[in-house]
Length: 331
Image (cartoon, rainbow, N blue to C red):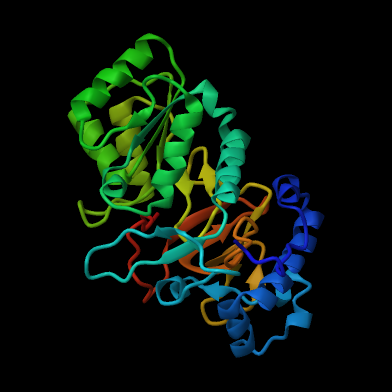
């Protein structure tokens, strides 16, 4: 329950088809709403020497450092019952994202899937996410599990370390010319592609990062080249998401990511993170309007480059940032 005295400044349905002008207006509304109702964000605004009344434009909005999700409970209203946690070793302090309304998360990733790929019902959905399935509270597993359910295909499902079974399923799908959405953590995709090289003609392969120290880290180019060669595909897609967000960006090739209408990426200088730009290189700052009940304005620890059309590359991790289990490979 949110609390009867806490009302959103707009309908959630408004988020999914925003124009650029509408996005900027809604972002200002969200900033004021969260500044008034989110204790952690409100304190950060005070520390940033800002005032709630001055948050009407994107350039004036303070972005919360992503590291706060490791040591603060960030939510609006009563404490939610749903918790997403980042991956990590036993020595790591993991990020915790308390999610008030999982329906918003589901609507976000389902509409994002439709935007980039069409209906999940047109695919067999396969998840090769061993490191995520072995722990609880994974937002990625939650997303893929829902996509599997919506797909409804008899072969849709998760595969832990069942490479031979997965190989047989993929061969069957290829023989039947079934469109397949095959998402996997990087190290598992590498292992599978080496064990069972093949020619995939009807499958889209999506890597979601995550070497987790299991292998020598590869550049994105090296990773994609290896997977393209071993799996016989022309391009490797990528997903850019994280525990602290309820939205994802997708790359349909060449590591160029695009956001859905309710998500926007900016860059800030490492020396002056408040000087945000819509293009160029710097530390990635993300506006995720689906994060309405936690914080929609996140300063990440990823370096990136934004292009003229708003698409972006991820260049690696910022210096001195904590290692994240879902860390991205460097380019």
